[in-house]
Length: 198
Length: 92
Ligand SMILES: [Zn+2]
Image (cartoon, rainbow over all chains, first blue to last red; front, side):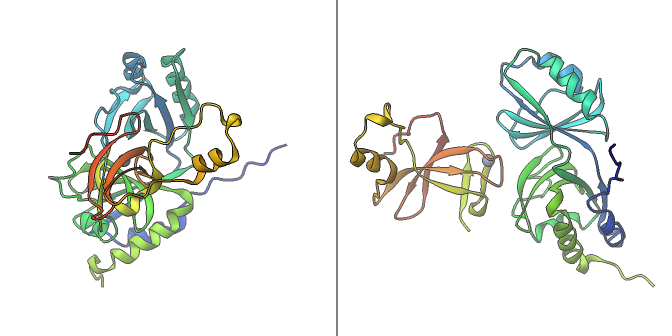
């Protein structure tokens, strides 16, 4: 007999403190998203892959692509010359995995469920780039990092993957075990941008 | 802080990288045929030039790819970066 333990969002206990940073910085955790690691060679059947994902693989390093394919809305981030991260709605790991495997059938490739590795934060607001700049060396000015940019780098010495969705809108992926530390750092770094409430 | 240009990701801070020692050291064709001295040379002996030096770097906090770089050991200037499967560029 197996015992079903309820899943806990890695930053569930931080929701209130992160929520108090609004409106300068709104942070919301999107836990349990489907994350699949995709390793493919350039000779992979890109048309079949594109049909599943609803988008081609991002061609340029440090970018991501979004689309709506046979498994719904997905983001596909470039992580390396033959490595991509497919992000989709929670709970569709088996379905998306088998769709991708079918599309890649017979080619040198790998699809691995890595959903448990990271949790996802959506960050937005007028102070978001200033707060990130406290601990991240990447130039996040819209001129240097336009929408569609995806960088793997360090934020407050923690490895992160950062997707730029719009000028003041980011998606941040962080390892689950580092997430509480990063949440504490974000709350601290954003303190000076908070507006007092009476 | 020094910026190191990853061939994939572009210039990043050096804290994102790990050093991998001298580049272009081939594994012996037939390791068991080597004498102890030859094996020790393969394992431990490395060039230590004053000037351009081809070495391996890993963009460990970024794309996690290994690449090669030619660095001037006197100035730390990175004279060239190139992919792991490319030959050492000629530095004039
Ligand atoms: Zn890189």
